[in-house]
Amino acid sequence: MRIDETLLNEAKAYAARNGRSLNSVMEDALRQLLNRSGTTERPPIELPLSGEAAGPMLTWTEIAEQIEVEDIEKALGGRHAHA
Image (cartoon, rainbow, N blue to C red):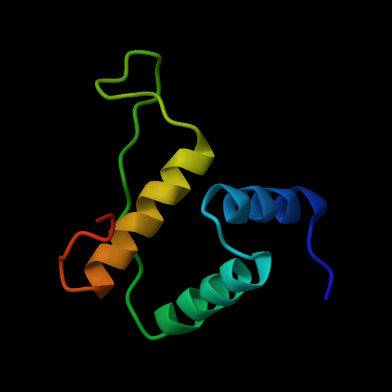
């Protein structure tokens, strides 16, 4: 299997930040992808197009992590995943 080097480095950093193995992160990502195959797509999110954002400025990594947290909470039936 070949993985884009930038993507692999991001996955390694995510695993390290969260005290997980790269293998477990990759397995979870693959499970999520396969579990979504029968579900409807996430509704579009409107993002501000100028520097006048009403909310905090987030990096793509922070946005992805927030989406993952929301997906985990949804899978747990609304319970908070970060206890």
